[in-house]
View (tube, rainbow, N blue to C red):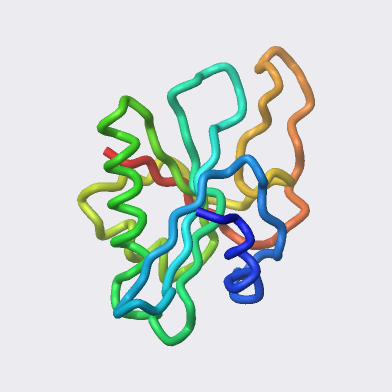
Length: 145
């Protein structure tokens, strides 16, 4: 998929308009109309089988019909079938509620996000300084089962 499609969705993303060029993009259509966007990227670090949702956006005309969850489940299942683990970190209340009540996802963390948007510091546990929270929003981390 041409990554320039992000321009159609960026103004509806709740955090910012930036997009990682290394992320793989998937787009959903309803009746030949573009409706949803999801991109995934390799999770940084030493474990090569972990992937994360980078951006998930459903256009306003298609919100509230379960398209975002459908896209999440479908893409996560594709990655699971090839031995990859999918995770998402979000601060969107409606998405947290939906994932909390979805049998396919486990919540592993809930709390204030750090400078990395909810990711814990990749530094070692042996006394290295962890990043501190500069944002007041809560984030939730979910793993696909």
